[in-house]
Amino acid sequence: MFKGIYTPMVTIFDDKGSVNKEATRILIEKLISNGIDGIVALGSTGEFFSMSLEQRKDYVKFVCEVIAGRVKFIVGTGSNNIEEVLELNKFAESIGADAVLIVTPYYFSLNDQHLYEYYSITARNTKLPILLYNFPDRTGTNLSPDLVFKLAVDFDNIVGIKDTIDSISNVRKYSEKFKNSQSGFSIFSGFEEYLIPNLLSQGSGIIGGLTNINAKIFIDAYKAFQKKDVDKLMICQGKINKLMGIYNLMDPFMITLKEAVGMRLNININTSLKNYSIEADENIKNKIREFINIK
Image (cartoon, rainbow, N blue to C red):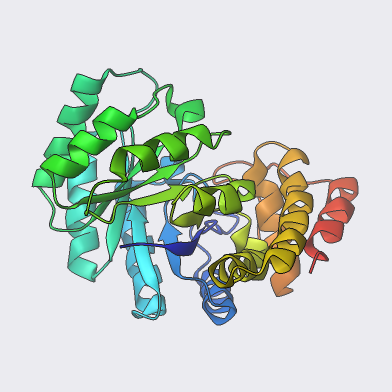
């Protein structure tokens, strides 16, 4: 069973659109030293949508080599092109990844029958554990509890879900569906502020972008929950609430995350999206500095 605090890592590019491997290595080492339970490469925060298949392969191979089995490693393999999904799943398996994270097809909203077909094909063609990725704000599709439960029952390697929806009700509904199951199905929230509600609803933790810049707050909250330390939980939740404000500074939010990563690690990196030149102004940078000083 997958559980705990996972980081969907930002992908740091250089000015030419290639992965900055030196900065990536520094970030990975920082996350591992902070005690993160796992790292996810090529999630939404990791800008999988802007990278070619070959670039994604080279990137995850490098990340896997740096991690070297010290924490769980999950590869985001989602795509509208299922042939790419199958190929990247196969590649992830060959390099020793622990699981794959597969977002629902996007742009066109699909019904449960078509989503079942999509995920059943992927499940039959990999030995790796699969985490479903529910992000209706970006895909236009919400994975229903009935569908998720059916997929988990029908396929032993569909073992969990990341639910990125601004409500705890989905996690509660998924948990209710699996409460009498012995499958150990993992239910992660994608919104960091729902970590504690997730755990209270029998969820498994978070896969949250803010852990790129301050994993310790979330790790402390997770440990406090396990120890039933309510006072510590309240303190951690207050810090998490403050930190969530970083998402409101500018859009796309990955730019502010990368700015914060550079500041936190004290390294000079390109903070724009791949193939763009979007920058945070000095006013935004000053606000980011305030957020990264939350301890």
